[in-house]
Image (cartoon, rainbow, N blue to C red; front, top):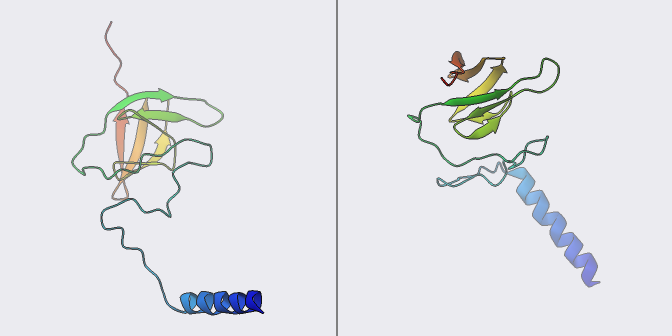
Length: 114
């Protein structure tokens, strides 16, 4: 009898939660419902960042066929990732295009002088 009662209670509880809309107030902390790992197995850095922080393109790993990566502010990113509130839109051999407020911004890889 007791397992049936527990099952009934769980059904009632789940039905009451499904009726109302639930929102998550992060209170300045990381949202636990956002994945920390990308589908290809890379860890994401989701720490809050300063909107005035400067984007520094440090390197590009380019493949004409396949996935390309860029190193921005010490983080490895690929198309679709976000860095400092900007989406990685395109990675080319010598530049990366990010979307800031839905506007493309180009960052050109600077070559080091010997």
